[in-house]
Image (cartoon, rainbow, N blue to C red):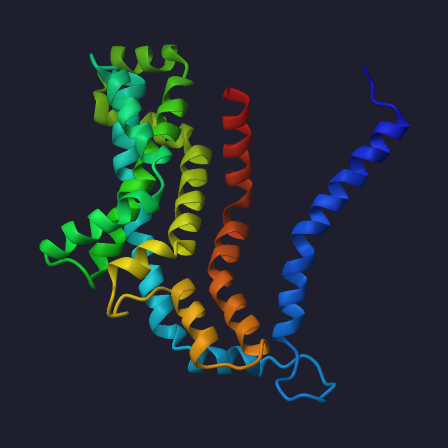
Length: 269
C-alpha cells in the first residue's frame, strides 16, 4: 500500500523535528566555542579558543589516556567476542545457552552495582591508578555485548558455506579468519564503533578506579576543567568539542560499514 501525500509530509515533519532536536545542541556548542572570551567583544571565529582549552585543560595527557584505554578495550573485547561468538553461534557446545545467558547478565547489570566491590578487588591486586584498572572492567562490559552481537551474526551465516569449508578441509580457525571475518565486516565495524563510543564516553569507572587522577580520561578531564580552570562557557565549549572530535572522526570514517551492520542486525532481529 502506497503512503498518501499527507502521510509523507507528516513523516518528513517528524524526521526533521528529531534531526533538529539532535543537531541544535551540537550547533550551539560549536558556535559558543568560536565566541570571544571577553564580554562585549562582538567578533567571531576565535579558533585560538581550542588551543587555549587544550593547554589549560591538560587535554594532551587526558586524550592520550583515553586513546590508550579505548584501543586496549576495543582490541581485547573484539578478539574475545569473536571467539566466544564463534563458539556459541557455530560450535554450539552443550550448556552453551546457559553460558550465553551468563554473558547477558553483563549487559543487564549496571556499572553502579559493581563498581565499588570491583574497586576493592582491583585495589587489593595493586591495579588501581593503572591503565588496567580502567581498561579491564570496560573490556568485561563490552565483551557481554560483543558476545551477544557476534553470536547473532554467526548464527545467521548460511550453513552451506560452513559445510563447504569443512569439506575442503578447513579447521575452525581457518573458517573464522578466512571466511567469517570478511563476511562479518559490517558487524565487526559496528561493534568497534559502539565499543569505542562507550569506552570513550565512560565517566564512572575512570573516576572510581583512579582516585589520584593519574589515569584521568578526556571526559573526566572536561568535568574538572569546568570547575578548576574556567569561569565562562566559551573555553568549556571548546574543550567539549575537542573531547567529542575523535568519536565524530571515527564515525565519519566508518559510517558506511556501521550503518550497514546496524541495518543487517535490525533485519535479523
